[in-house]
Amino acid sequence: MTDALVSGGTALLPRVEFDAARCKGCGLCIEACPEHIVEFEHVFNQRGVQPAHLVHDGLAQCTACGNCAVVCPDSAVEVENRKKPLKYGRNPLRVGDTHYCPGCDEGTVHELLAEVIDELGIREVTVGVASVGCTVFAYRYIDIDWHQAAHGRATSVAWGIECQHPELRVFTLQGDGDLAGIGIGETIHAAARGDPTVVVFLNNGIYGMTGGQMAPTTLLGQKTTTSPAGRTARLQGSPIVMTEIMAAQAGCSFAVRTSVHDAPAIRRTKKYLRQAFLNQEKNRSLSVVEILSACPSGWKLEPVDAHQYLVKEMFPIYKPGVIKEPPGGMPR
Ligand SMILES: Cc1ncc(C[n+]2csc(CCOP(=O)(O)OP(=O)(O)O)c2C)c(N)n1
Ligand code: SF4
Ligand code: SF4
Image (cartoon, rainbow, N blue to C red; front, side, top):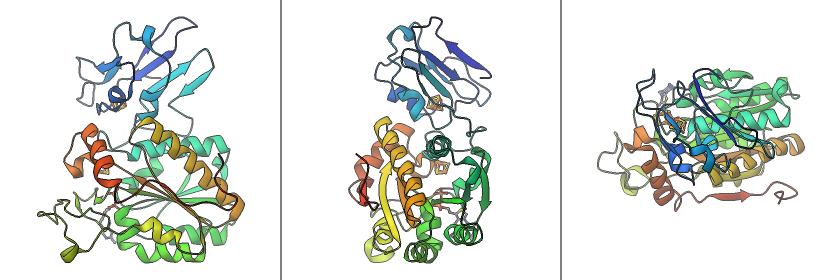
């Protein structure tokens, strides 16, 4: 690991590496560490932020839970439990620094997708369809084949690939403006047809890339650049709950809503993504994994506050959990 601060010298202690150059200083690892042994350094890195590192002598208290590595949206932490052995963070498919804002959840979803594709051994047959929005550069970060779709058209592009190459495993990565706004027609028709696509739906309740405009998923009362007084049901309509709508279509065989706001949620989301790819192989119909995603920049909140907002304000409207079980049920 380049520019890495390496801690841990003996075989019994965990190995914990913080990549100072990669860190964008969001502080999520500091929040996630149950032993409180992660802090910001006093010096600045090339990105102009104070990167996270382990406190002096922190390794002696480290339990190798891996939470810091699991929550890092930028693959900047690696933890190895040398007793088990177990490793967290960094996998062979994840490449490059991401452009996402500090604390943005979209990078964490890349990590999970890369891990699942790697662990299922489907790298050579998987094609991602990147959409327009903050995930537009997804093809730079996961080393598989990609296709770029125009705004809202990702499921249609996926269907085109699937028609020509039924042997391939195709997934889309779409924001809520993309999937529920301009692409709402394409999305519902894909669910009705039962395309064998894994739809990964990042719902941050806002148009992030273009500067925080109101999306179909914006909460009532939420202030955005195009609803400065807060969204009202009368004027702009109520938030659209897309995953329930997709689940209601006969061709959708697995629908779930989840989040990546803390380490247990990240682990659950990985399980759901894995299930979606397994469902794709077994049932050849549409799976949707909606991931509630913090947008600290668009919401004008600090990363940790953004996750609190997500739990307090988004969960009551967008309830996490399995909406439609896959045929045969969820593995316990
Ligand atoms: C046809 C078309 N209309 C509008 C745009 C401008 N545009 C680019 S990104 C975007 C919003 C993306 O929001 P979302 O899908 O929620 O993704 P996020 O950026 O929040 O991840 C819009 C409207 C475009 N690129 N193409
Ligand atoms: S979670 Fe990652 S990017 Fe954020 S402060 Fe920690 S190491 Fe840096
Ligand atoms: S604008 Fe929002 S969604 Fe886009 S990268 Fe920044 S935090 Fe993430």
